[in-house]
Image 1: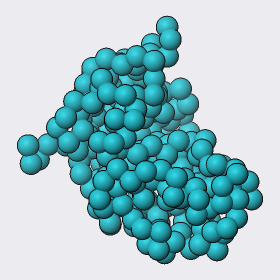
Image 2 (image 1 turned 90 degrees about the horizontal axis):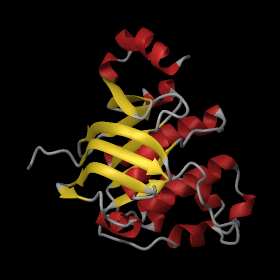
Image 3 (image 1 turned 180 degrees about the vertical axis):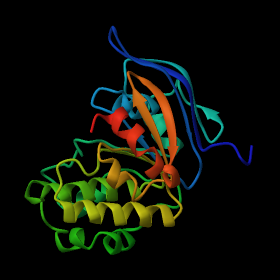
Image 4 (image 1 turned 60 degrees about the horizontal axis):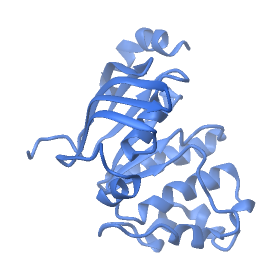
Length: 235
């Protein structure tokens, strides 16, 4: 099992009520990788992340994390296995300041970053440590949302659209942060609309369409597949 993927998703199907969203999703993530899910709006990227966490109505198929089947687990038990989800809406508590937001999630394992290390990664947050969540910019809220899950000890981080709506300078900061997180040994699954940003951080890209994975492109082969990628993404 030494070479088994950290995350192995096989024939994953998901439903919201009667709506059948995922139709047999297959992909894997090796430990230490940054892997992106690319695709147009409605392709099933966010639903795939929520399905991994157990945040959909119904799932079928297989999700193996570190060799253990987790498709039947409740969301809290998935999180305690070592998977953390940073949703697009960020979920910052407006009534708490930055430090209080950081301290909110429980530690589920050793290996999480302490507050000092987090503030080294995110100097903007250290400057705003006593500021309430309502006073943060969109970029600062995104940094806080990522920083908060780094404390928990989770080793697989699911980041949903971390650059959405952010200024280019903040997008560059998020990129640097993801590269530093990878260097620290974390594994990242990233949903991203901006494939040019994804190319600066990821090892591999899975392309989704109509609730399925239709292609996998190694980052080193992105340039020669650019025409195909434009067709997939409609850009």
